[in-house]
Image (tube, rainbow, N blue to C red; front, side):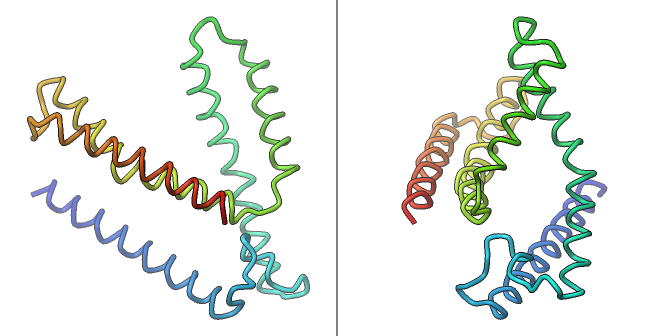
Length: 171
């Protein structure tokens, strides 16, 4: 009963978020059409009070959200490098320098979002579930005993991710 309720709450939450994102995207498109900037707030006038408030809210969100994401990134990279990797301060400096360097040269946030969507979307939809199912099956769990389905799903994720990336880079 708890699992069914959890599933219902999760599905409802994703549905609400999907609806909210769709409404926001539709409003942005209805307002600016094809002239919408990749960073939608940049499409609004600098003197627009509501846009200024939204920019401040985004700034606060990024200001307090970035450190959380950065610490996770640093931890995962340090874990992947193992004991042979650089010390914590050096890794922090290298990662921050790389992120700031990229931020200085990337002008089109829409392209960054499109690349992320093309690659991570196909991974999350096709490859990740298959990888998790394979891991469960190897530990004695998992519902399906057909590894070829997992292989097809993972391959589909890779192919669709590469195709999405190629199409995104060409446009």
